[in-house]
Length: 287
Image (cartoon, rainbow, N blue to C red):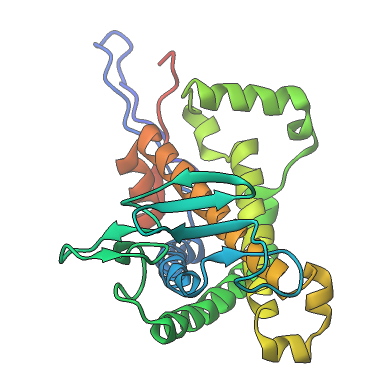
């Protein structure tokens, strides 16, 4: 990480105080910025095309097999008058949003997810698969390159490594309370990732995204024949599909929390740093 630019101080101690220039640091290197924006687009397309594929059979099972007569642990469905989501034995009415909704032409539809949330917007399982498989390759190649750069380029050691004092329950609880109170780091502390940021980024890069790729491969009959151990690892093709679905929504949750933190911490400074790499340190609270 580059050294911060020194603040400008008044030369005459007797002169009126002059506001110091903002201190800037080079926070995000080029590979991080490229991967961040490419990944945002890739994951959005994967989510929307994945919802189109899910519309073909909006039910999830555990184990190797699953079909309409089998009991699903999760389902999105419709009756002649309502839409609903069922999780286990709990049923939630979702008419107008999921299961049964009205399209832009005013016609009632009974797909699980509405057209505005899917790619393509009109029902087409074949096109949904084409979009999904192409961008799955984009995700897999991009993630592999970024993981290698993170490990060997110093990003993991410098920015994501969780040091021994940070594992302290007291330290973690303090960070949780600060986030709950919207007390974000100031000054030099803002240049470093907090423990919650480190754990969430490590979880996404090294756990959630690889899990998405591996469960996606497990659902492929060709890969099941080539690498049958994948079926054993994930407990069957239907279990892999369920894990894939859950991991996708955990990524959506991460995105929503990440977006909220950016908006609360100062969107102009945060977005600019992810475009140019340069980040302005927020002044200390007592400054």
